[in-house]
Length: 244
Image (cartoon, rainbow, N blue to C red; front, top):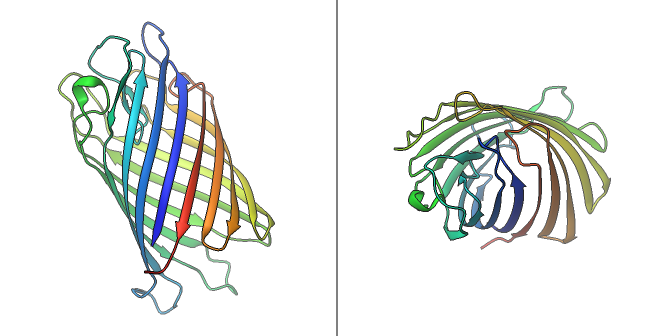
């Protein structure tokens, strides 16, 4: 089992017209179950993870937010600060580790459902269910691990705005500096959720520090490269692993 705590702060106009800044804060609580006892291949290195995430979100500005979908827009509202429960997310991932002696990549297949638990009338979500499917690959070469993923997000249809299904892609590399410290950088691209808006393009620098066995801390920083991204964002995650 893994208990996770997270915080994310971002700021930008997100391609709003006219340009007006929206600031978003997210605090998340997640619980994950890991099962290494369901191998679908001959190897013994497969595992299945089921993760549920409960967010609390605060929005300051004219936008509405679906931070999981990285969408900001929707029904016009005033610029007062809104705070409340965000959209609950359930994610299932199946990981197949390639044999060490081969050059085949590790493969990660995942499906995610975002439930409309946030109050769309206050700009805290879209009020619709989204479904995302992704395929990821990675391979370790000494201290370096290049990785990448591609996916598709099927967007629900809110009442006040037209959204389109989105392609998602990312790629990067991590570097294990020490057995307790890993750093990395990735490029993240997401198709615009609204027709006519710019696609999101971001550079993310991240790290993971294992404070002690079973406890990990991961700060990160984001730089937006287009109007469809936040200008910048900061965040951190805390993960606690244990066997019940």
